[in-house]
Image 1 (tube, helix red, strand yellow):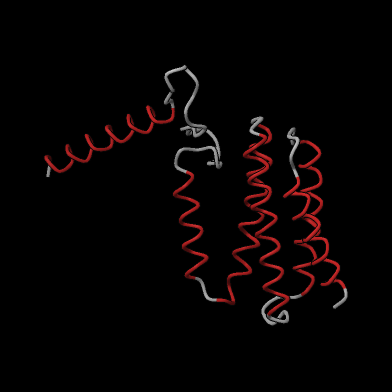
Image 2 (cartoon, helix red, strand yellow; image 1 turned 90 degrees about the horizontal axis):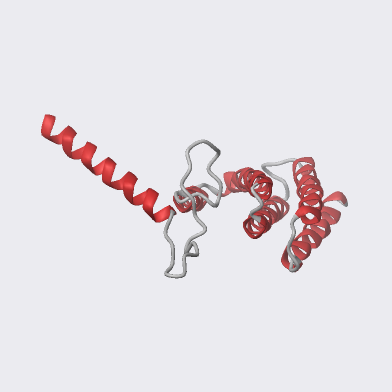
Length: 171
């Protein structure tokens, strides 16, 4: 029993050291070779070293969920990615903030398109309308603050969400 505990403890120490050293990896020229970080005092954002595991779990849950629940999950993921975008923007991570924003926009579009395709059997059109309005308004605010030249994809996605919103408002 004691030997098993010692082995687990040593394994945890080795893993911790490995994660910390990976998050601080530098190239020969002294430039950071990774943009992933390891931190414990903040919410886990896409710049975190362990974030890929969160993304994989989200994708697995979405894939394995029944059709009637997928739109709800996509709305939740869209909101979470929107919050990630704001958090990354606060950290001056403009490229990652833009990536999180576009993922958010795609999730909102997918969820509301799914609701529309299912003739709003499981959801009220009002839910889709409110979600798209939130996405569009927040996207516009974020796009004004993200300091990057190429925001074409995010602008196109916002336009697509606006067209979908117009379609839903006619129901």
